[in-house]
Length: 111
Image (cartoon, rainbow, N blue to C red):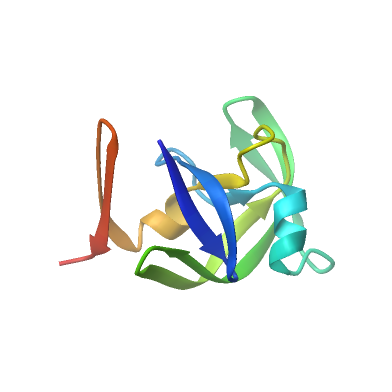
């Protein structure tokens, strides 16, 4: 499922991925958002394509509509295709109540 979200005020297109531990940003999109890449440690992450190196850093704010989270861990690197800026993984989604049904995503504060 695709969703529009903003990272540090920069709009992008994201795949909702409940199997991803972190929000993942392409390096090009990450640079647009101003996340700190210079001081980000490199970590190995397990993706659908196997082990891969990513820079681990923090986004000040990630927002979908009225739902926002601050100081979200993000992994930077990889290519998700020309029109996809990243994955919305559990470092963002776990902060909310998330319901995915065919063609519909609902995110709300935990009850």
